[in-house]
Length: 223
Ligand code: CA
Image 1 (cartoon, protein in one colour):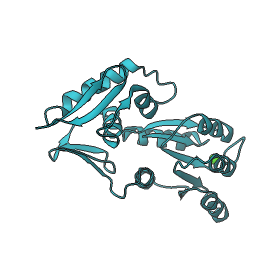
Image 2 (image 1 turned 30 degrees about the vertical axis):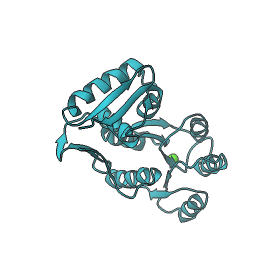
Image 3 (image 1 turned 180 degrees about the horizontal axis):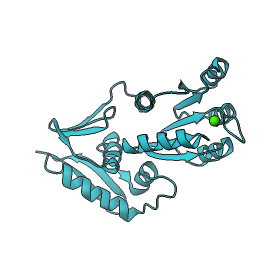
């Protein structure tokens, strides 16, 4: 899951980054509306957290341009407490949800989970594949109902593989989903994460198969 945060308030942005990264999301941040516009035109995200009061281009214009390009990515707008009018405008322009400042990070994370779930077209937060399951809401994975101890990066990786279980996921797709800008994550690093995740999940009837030169595939081992 890759999230873009467009927020010019440094303290708020830092809090959001820490909290979401700690839950295993890959998060990029921009400070101005024009940067947000450029980032959204060039990269694919799973969710956008968009402050409306941004320098250089208003958040509503960023949103208008995003939807104008036909992008369906879920957008959560951040508004000032008293700006009912902007909230309504944002929702009319295609925002999926809003939060009025100040808000609790806990509530924001709950809305992020709901929106990313909706983005995947699923009403439930549980993704299952054989004995493996992942609770996207709690950000925890289970093997035969036993919780697996995973790092934030491993959680992100497992989530991507599970969402496409049984299908090939290329290394480039993994890099795009898991890595943030300035994060020098090479294909080799992806191999290292996959290796670590394998050690933690491959004692059950599932495996992460390597498709040489192409990528990986989470499979059930036929019994
Ligand atoms: Ca602002």
